[in-house]
Length: 247
Image (cartoon, rainbow, N blue to C red; front, side):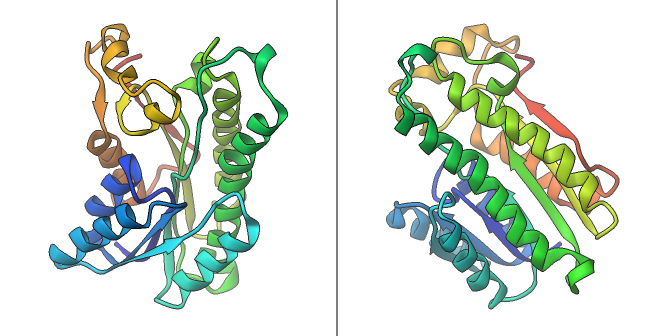
């Protein structure tokens, strides 16, 4: 399916699940990580043990130069034909009237600018306009984009709303260049990101608010992402798929 697939935020949660799931269909999986080298190398070792090929590459997606380095490294290992734009952060629950500038700047830099930087570098290498083979990009949004996350993290929700718009615009921009661009909006998913927001038990606490009466797994989200990356979704672009249990 893919030559080289780049996954940001690949050391844990949804990113790690995507890396393990896509590995059998990729010649090389690049596991991008911000700081947890041990976790990223564990994902790599799992892929290698299963017969695949993978490499961990440190990258703060909010840093333009680091993103360029990530894609230069990736392209040196083969043709880049896939990007899962998964790197992102949130912060502890708060109201908008208590948000400090440094917090919102960090969230927008990593979640919005980071996704733009990565997609830009991917398009440069994937587009048939530039001699690439084409490929697929999946951007990670969130159900928060449509729910707003009031009194929790409206800044994070707004950053994901930007990703929804970005997905539509980029999909139309590169539709004739062999690149499909789609998004996935996870809902209440059992991942470590809730701890970053100060509520490690949030998924369990929120399960009753989900129509299916349970939280989802990283693997369930990864299945949707990998389908969108695959040729089975060959006529799907500009779409954002909710993986929310109906929430």
